[in-house]
Length: 493
Image 1 (cartoon, rainbow, N blue to C red):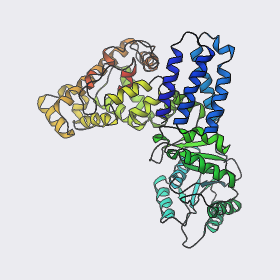
Image 2: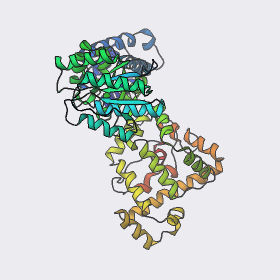
Image 3: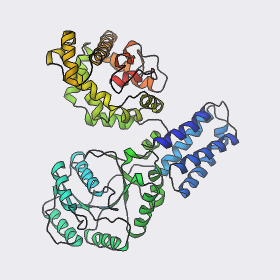
Image 4: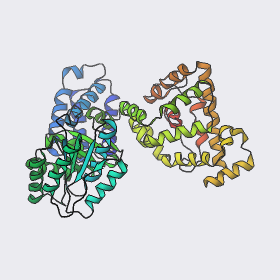
């Protein structure tokens, strides 16, 4: 997400941080590079001009140039301006109205409206504990209504029964009546789209809005279309009273032009971002957090929230007790690998940890990817319960069987066992350091170069427990240079 822009801006700020003092000429030269980076990211020209003018005006002030760390001050100013451009504050859905709160989804065909409708309905049901009804008003696209019905079954959210021949306004009226009679908190209307903006589409949107009186009209746009997404948003803004924007396919948007332009063009906040194909892959849009991720500062808050959502508390408590006792078998290792996959894999996690952008590039260059986790899981899955609990039972004959079962080599089994042995040694050291307190110390930078301490580059070397040599040679994970301090332990967590 935003990789291209993040890399370009990172290069600009690395030069600034390396300077002891900055002149006004230095700042203006850096801002010219920021301007080029934003234009290359497909950010709308008026937005770029306003952004650079604001940031430059603040950055050439005497407080910055006389600062002890002028480079850091400029980065902070750009970060604040970026947050302001993205919308400053996080925007909530306006659903605290007399039920049912109507949410109307609008946008072009192919932008992801129907899937986004189901994702939001699922989120409202699970996080907000709302009773949600979905209704498809799309009578143009073949099987559009059936698609929403299938998604309703998958998310366990009610959908309005399909009546053949009804037109959008009639469906909206029937959906509103059903929602009132059956006590639904939220009614989500998935409206029809077109291949391009036309007056017939706009007239239909206005007619539906007049009947449904929606609390929210959310424009769904595909962030990958860049400047086209901005143009679509502008067209809808001129015709329909939008209250917010949902950007889809944000996980594949390396440039970020649509996200950075959308608030300025529509005057409305970006409320949600689609981050994948799964029905839980939608996140509330936090401008400050996104700005930090763009500038390579990570997003620890979102990382913690994602962990809280995916961790099974009972399993976590069980593992914590085992770690405190210095125990760590292959079942525990497998649980940790599974947890990493549920949280989005290595790439997603690396992007959320401060200072990990360069480490992420290093991982990619070395061939480290999410297939590595699958290979490790396959090896452990090929073992018997006794072998997972007591790895020392794995003799030569058993290793051959395990390797064949996973479709890998005996050497891969040996590397996995070496990795486990090193982690087990680390757990025993934690026990000596004081159990759970020692574990917390490792995670916050004490002792063996912890996860958060080492992430920023301040921690010490992680020692034997952080050595990746046990992973070398696994398919998708060839011999690789050592990563920044603390990150080795992260790979294993």
